[in-house]
Length: 317
Picture 1: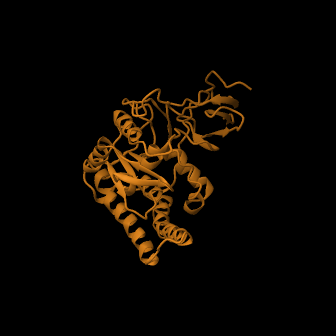
Picture 2: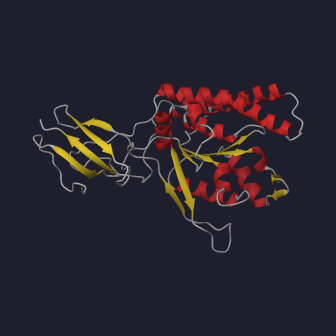
Picture 3: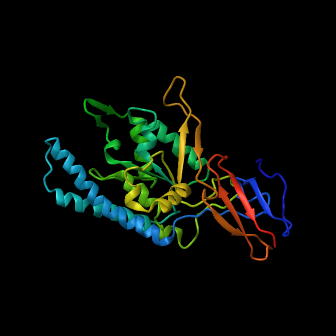
């Protein structure tokens, strides 16, 4: 079955066709129905927020237990766990109370800096921030404290020393309010996940910061803030939401990326390829058609077809 190439708008016509949904407008070529991007509900966003605060304590306890198993000192474990929760709550409060424009792109800094390397590549992080700002995004990098030090351990027997220009870039980001430094003993994943569901109350001031389809600026359409990360979140998904809601959150907020390989110098600027979040949801959905008398058009994804193709079904009037 080939995708329908022509419109079948006549209400008396049965539509049962394979169609290719327009990736820019999310419209069906056969019925002109617009498919929706189905995101998580406000109650689910609050659930993610509150669950992350609980997870901060649990992850701190797990971390100190691993240190104890290695024979390293872990005094005041309970206090450290409570402190991890307080620090994440302070981050949440800061996002809601800060002045300025709301953040529209949250960068998983460690994921980007480590991508394709066995060490922290600060230049790679520089290029990511530049690329996002050129697309009109207001960026916040979430970055662990240890990677802002001049010298730090990457793993057993491996130490990295940052150059002055790398330190200056990181310091500049923080001074401009474009980087949030995650305190030691805290899990940075929890911070960028929480930022994705923050209301950013004061800076947003009741405005929607989502980007419409086919916008004149050429920005990726969809909910904001988006999260730039290749993290699969296997360690967290079952704790946060049920499977369908978790998939909706990831598909609407998470933007994956890839850097082109460098030729000679790893600090050189390279093209970044983004896999933008979905414009319409990859699940069965029914939508009314404008002027269609309130009738519903159904679209069904089929696993063997291309990502934008659906089986379209509309019963005749």
